[in-house]
Image 1 (tube, rainbow, N blue to C red):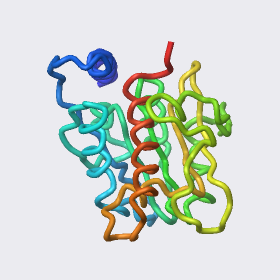
Image 2: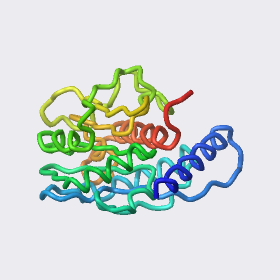
Image 3: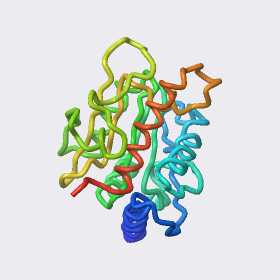
Image 4: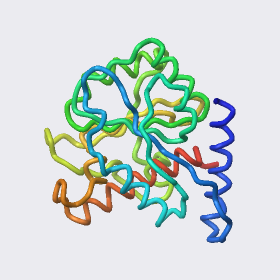
Length: 226
């Protein structure tokens, strides 16, 4: 499974290099996933968000993401997905096996985006520590490539929904120089990816959310720019 993930990321890198040069080279279809977890939190929140992000990336980044699927935190199937998204409003619990599985996935080339949908923060931080006890979440500076790899966000994460009125923050776990886990807090990117009819966001707000999501997809597929 780990070897398969490395093959997938290599294919994605080659595909992106060709697509940025505007060639007509066909790309292999890739799937992305939403993380299923225990604890009572609504992992299934924002049901239209990833599908809309997939469509945006396929149109604007020339990716060929075929579908969005659900994957359990402890399943070996997670190694089939170069990008996994996690969201929710409440409690999260990873067993020791799930934490180790997520760790192996991430250090093998995977990427996990955790989006606090408001109310997850106090629960997810201890669970991240289970995955990477040796690392601390660090806030990424605004000049980090994740904010500029495709679309430019000079002030970091866009503010999609107000919630507590705090500024949005992007935290990360960095392993061997690469962001393997990105945690968006006080931002609610996933809400901005949803169908416009769900939250009634303006098109400008939705475009900011989708473009930042595209940056995450691009970074997950390509890694840290040389």
